[in-house]
Image 1 (spheres, rainbow, N blue to C red):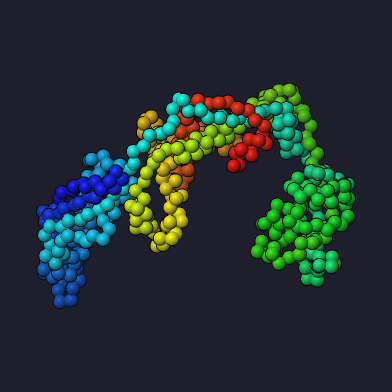
Image 2: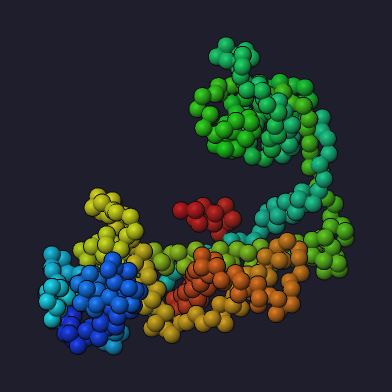
Length: 450
């Protein structure tokens, strides 16, 4: 067998595979002999079918299978030995036929197209400057977190009137266009939280109301819409389009969250016995925890910013025509040219980023070894245990759990991606010049949501 390469241009090449009888004859004969021993052909006992009959009946199919294996092995061996960086996989040359005769097999020639990985330079160096945006941990943010903690560990008590953060147990009755109770309409009791009522008019219509009061509301204005609205009314989401936008809401009960006291009992519940002993220490701990939490968000925002700039400014050409053919041939389900054209830009963007990341990892000898992945997974498990206040098991049990998680292909891919992103972020932080910048929490959320 002989494999030769012919470059079409910088991004495309042809591989020609020439196969001679010596490459396939023995393998075809051996396979046919196995068939002969098990073939069931009328008039012959199993194992006594003449070879010529077996060859006539199965020869072409066996030859085709063997040629396919030989050619595939030859292609990938040639690619590996010559260190050719390809995109996708080799595909048969367009509008070409196999050069060879299956009736009287002798020499065969196959031609394949390959897409070559492009050469490019990354516009990234120690002179590159990027904002490293951090959340300003000020008194207002600490107070907000302190309020959330005391409410989370507080207790519900009955209240006489509705406050802006109270919970209301109410009965909803559907009204008709005249504002009267709709015959056969919806009648359902449910709960709403005033904290999640974003419509100002609806919120003000409820604040200050007492048990037994009736208020006409639009159900979408006192819920978060969609499935939440449907659940509040006890109906399917698909039925929302058919109902009235006016409901009589009768307040049956009001619950107020009484915040927990800032005392040693709360400190111990939050951080363990004796870890915090004063409100001052609690605020310092909250500030440190917020800083650590937002540090990861700041790094993710930095990585996203650099990602966007690299995609925009890195000049990468792709063998588009080849890739489109390869996508169509390798796709499990048929894909039309229109669908392919509509989705190709997104695919090309993803491929360009893969090439950029691969280049960064290769040129800087960044690797993901198995032990590192296991240790990273163990760290994720420890964090999960801590989140629920559960002590982590011993190291051997933790390792066993990590291996079980990595045994799930989807989970393993997710974890590899997380570790790769962390390494990429570390590389960016150690390479570019960071311009440290503090902004408010609200501004940070707005920036991160873009």
